[in-house]
Length: 120
Image 1 (spheres, rainbow, N blue to C red):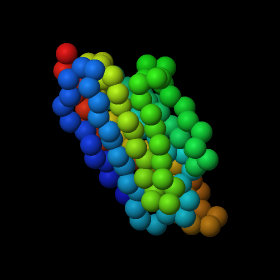
Image 2: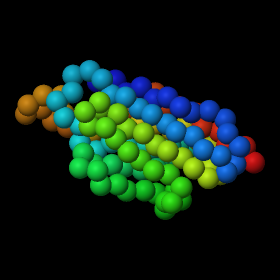
Image 3: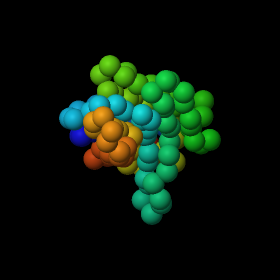
């Protein structure tokens, strides 16, 4: 299973960016999908998560500014980021809790990461 992210870049504070992630490969079912981020010198943290049924969960720091969405038919997940702040600067990683076959165990897959830089 491969996760490919796109949409990162450099943006000014209060600007917007949209991240996209597409999963491909031997996929039987994807449970939760999410976006994590890791800033220099810090641990990777959850930004937003969405279940296959569409329930969402956000880090307190991004509530009201970020929106996660997914297309189950296309195995994609997006993160719309508005009102960006310099403290949102990090490498953003896509994550998918995936089952690759009937009776197979769940496994977490990760994208390669995409850099988001917010200038003040």
